[in-house]
Length: 508
Image 1 (cartoon, one colour):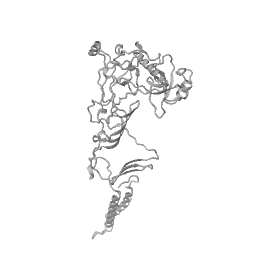
Image 2 (tube, rainbow, N blue to C red):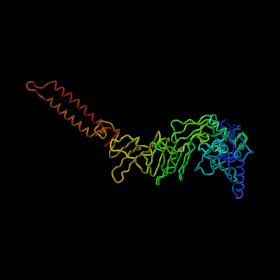
Image 3 (cartoon, one colour):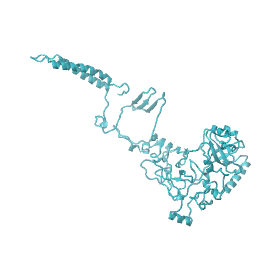
Image 4 (cartoon, helix red, strand yellow):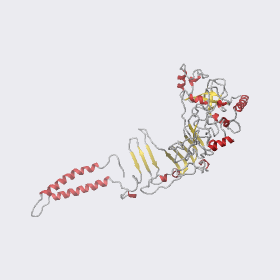
């Protein structure tokens, strides 16, 4: 595997300037711990490289049944491979270099909790002496490597903590001729340029990623999340998060993002569950750093991005090596920019957090004030509340001790009830006689009574005209005919009053 032109070997020399230890040091430490584990009668945890992730057990059976299948003869216990639980792995122990066969590793805990793992990542496996291994979870890594979407553990063995400070590097930087440091998929220390390799040929992380036979993971850029002390956070691999913490988040009008809002002291009694997808979402992704140029600085809580040696875009975990600024607020809760959120808090200035004062249309009567209390908020582009055909939806405001109840109810029979002491529909700015220029809705009973009275008055007038007599001249044929015609038409029009009321919409 090539080293890539962007990261000279001199800059990847392991030692005091790298995050990890040498492979010899790691293996010596593992051997010592293994011996200690043996003395205690137990088996140690070992490191293993993920070769396949088994989401559908039937798929691996289909592959094994093919004479020329890519996994034929490569699994130590093919019989067991035909009865695997979902979430099992095919793994290659990092310490095993004499075989090209894979071990089977099933989840260590029950299916109540299913941990993520991707081909090419390293996981902890445990051997209890049985026919298969147990895997516990992906091995954590340093801050320059750790990524919830995909973590290439071996980068720790070659990534400098600080930029090179030798005279040549300084001169190249000054001239602008130095190439940017890009994330590699090295195998062990310095890969094939002379360092120690972790895996037999073809079984390194880069090769395994390119030879996946089963399900591949979705490559994504996920901002890193900063929890407060005491927070419990659950992150998915594709920018989803459930945080059990306290009330916090950036607001629409915030402009200074010099530090994480995790560093702002939390208030007592503000326990909050934040369920969010798409943290730091931007209308357009910033330009990633590549071999020849630095990328764009992200806005608000977004991530810096970088192209790795395969041309894939990932979160930039090494900005300082390319003399780029770190976004201290990366991945923080952002009420304005995050894509979708359900926010449940025992006490929060909820209207202020979501900057709702800027979004409200003026009320037709009265005014709104920002509230701070137990709150639930939902925010996204498109929100749907769906009840099944035999279900219902109820939005109820309790009446409490007074008489201030209000409700919107969608019943299973298709009826909709909107009820309250006063109901406003529409917006301000009209020229009507109601509050803020609104138009009061007409009561049918009053309108009907008025129209009946008008018809009766006109009908009486017509009768008088028909029996009128002009002195000396008698009855006017034209007036009598006109009155009779109007009276006949009034009788027709009166029937239309009964059509005014809707048989679907009712109110006060």
